[in-house]
Image 1 (spheres, rainbow, N blue to C red):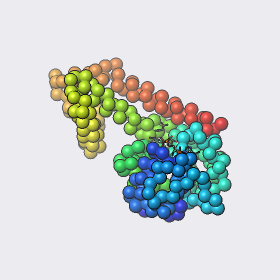
Image 2: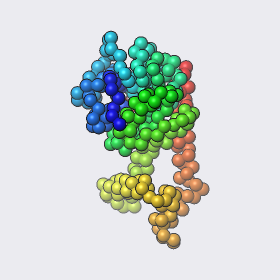
Image 3: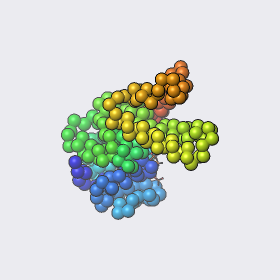
Image 4: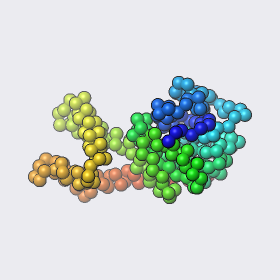
Length: 266
Ligand SMILES: NC(=O)C1=CN([C@@H]2O[C@H](COP(=O)(O)OP(=O)(O)OC[C@H]3O[C@@H](n4cnc5c(N)ncnc54)[C@H](OP(=O)(O)O)[C@@H]3O)[C@@H](O)[C@H]2O)C=CC1
Ligand SMILES: O=C(O)[C@@H]1CCC=N1
């Protein structure tokens, strides 16, 4: 699947949009197709046109929004005249209808990426109301080089998808850090504890992806009866401690996505 033709503009290109763009360029997107518009004019990859204001008398085929959801109401009026064929949004929470009402476009597609897209091992969920297969193909052609690219049929579920996969890397990074800290607490040198935590999460994740059994079953395979893993799992499982913590974590993120959607609706 090749990249869509025509000019691609990114309004906002920070941690997330920047990671997507770097991956696209590494996978062969022509930098001459791309214009990045930010306030500072910094951080655009080499070969990409970087501007601090919209070009005059030009319009992109694809316009991607990469700024914060809280900025939509200020920035949208400046984009309303462009009328791109496809408007892509990575804004957490903000709904397709809110976007379509503020920025006219042939079609609106919501993307929810996560940071590992930088290495092609991310998740980029997609949602659109458009039945146009050319629109869906173009969005997929951009999402696929980033990693897993599932379509979500029900926009009401997009906040949950965002909480799990969009925010998820932060929760995993915290978990890795907590494992390392716990190792340090048992007397390991900090560098060794971090190496062990990172390699263990990396190996366990890679194994779980290709395994013939669910992660819950794999956990039991590590735990020999009467052994030390079971003692540790008993702590995580007591009163469903880890499950409850993760449920509360995702609920808080999902709720915040809904709040940002509400604020953008006005
Ligand atoms: N970080 C993540 O893991 C994820 C983020 N997202 C979404 O991505 C979006 C961006 O988040 P993130 O990358 O973390 O944020 P950053 O703060 O890293 O990036 C924000 C970008 O917006 C630019 N910007 C700010 N104001 C304007 C303006 N008026 N006109 C043009 N550009 C502007 C900033 O550049 P400058 O200051 O130079 O203008 C910067 O490039 C959010 O909507 C978020 O919901 C989605 C999934 C995951
Ligand atoms: O924190 C945020 O709002 C964004 C949404 C998903 C990840 N980061």
